[in-house]
Length: 237
Image (cartoon, rainbow, N blue to C red; front, side, top):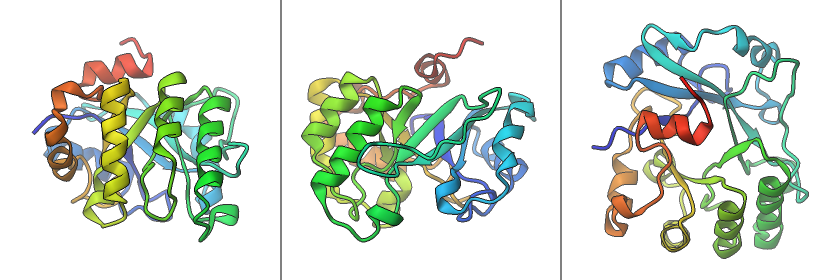
């Protein structure tokens, strides 16, 4: 199995996460992974302890031998692509993810044009965003032709989310079309777990099985290795 660098993991700080940061570090060590990104939710999803993002910059880069990339998963708030990214002095994030979530204007709304406009504008107007999360979520249909074009234009990776496949939240037909387009256009992909519990973190089997027919070696996967991840994030170490 390919040693992807997991760029989407939630801790107990997210209202949906199960483990502390130190527990996650132990989990990653147990799975022989050398790095991951801590990407808890932003304020829109009622994430507690807003000071946490400020304190991220005081964390060491390496904890017990594991490189921890300091990140956040922001929510796209409206069709203008505004995201709920808390910006503090010192700007602590090494990676920013953004995606649609079930809240406010997007709650139970199957409007593909509105969803697509929101995600495209989020990519266009937020140059700090590196990855669009779960873009084939069944609850939020997107026009994949427009999404893959925008991702290629703005150098943003589209996520292959293992947990969404595992937990039946993916529109697999739309996901397959997205991968076909990404392969054709060279659009970047990020293979992540979106792990909330130990058995999901740094697990990619469902994603790999899904991608095999397209030839993993022919896909522009940004977090294929630790080194490629550093290059993608623009980090020199």
